[in-house]
Image 1 (spheres, one colour):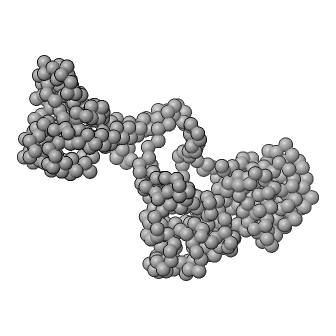
Image 2 (cartoon, one colour):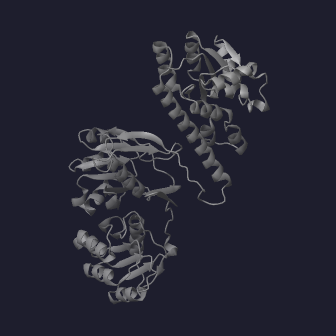
Image 3 (spheres, helix red, strand yellow):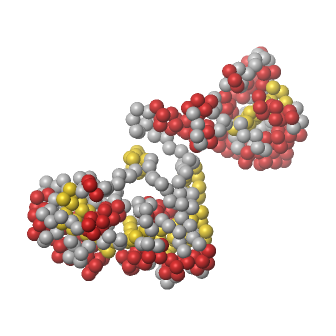
Length: 511
């Protein structure tokens, strides 16, 4: 049990600090403080000893140097060993059994408009040093870093006369988390400003816990959900759940996949996802039109699917959803009629509040013992980039359909094939180990709708067999990267069938 006789309080965010300091004072704890914190406490009637009274040194450099002094740090770092106590006693230093610190608002500063100088001035030096010193010496120094800790710390001290070893351990753990997170954000900011490469020498992402999930991908796996602290665009992470069960690991993956797809389009779009792959994608004049076309794209796979729309769901759209079993729905907004209709279904409903203007940043994938990091694939294919490889030129309608299908196929697991018209997919073949098998699956799903459709392939065709299968089903045009050593054979096949084919010059693999 650690009895607290003296506490050093130095906080940037002063919410709740007066009540905490008064609680400590009532328990007989001497309060030592700095600058603005000392003024706040004194004005509230708390008896405060200024840090300068311990150090015999004034604050310097506009407050940059306050607590960085042996009289403070020796008091924080001393243990109960006689040699330690003798050394600090010789120097007239007394133990400090509690450090209460929160840090300069660096994160808040860089989120808004700011200058580099403003960011630099909000990098805390003394605060992290005190927190780390106290956390290192946690058996003899309690470290309070969050307003959430004020009440439980006071309650335990009132009840037991001090703080237990378990409490000190938990306070230290939170202290090291606080400084690690803070330093990671500063490092990330400086790398963006001064880094000479896109990828830092040490990759230190910061994610804060959002949810403890019931389980992971399977019930025997535990899982949690984390979020980037500075996310400022509509996504699954900051979507508001309006109704439904708790989000699961698989729900989050599928919702994110569906949301990413509909965000590709500026006009109303709907996507239904199963196991992170789109089963169908469609465009419409309104939400209801897009949903109807999307269901028609693959009605069988839609059962229990995850639905995303990039536009407001109205009552008309919700009525069309009534007869289908949909596991979850994500959209920017809903009107009152839609919410009333959906409230009678078991569908989980999430509201994002908008659609992101653009999606940038990094993507990561964990491998055993390492992490792969890459830029998001934000490249947009423009019509003028298409290179016609066939004798027949594609029609305007085929070009429109190919550009639509290309946006979809970049979200399909490789090897991926998409059959589509200008406004909807009619068959998707995802994640096959041979490209021709992906074509066969897409053709089978499309059935008669393959006639006159276009085919998008996320990678080049290594053989002509995929073209043969598509042509026999009635596919009229092909969009693919090109680049195979057998491009000549593939082009010959396309010309034999009177199809049109364009090369993009770049692929859109997804693993």
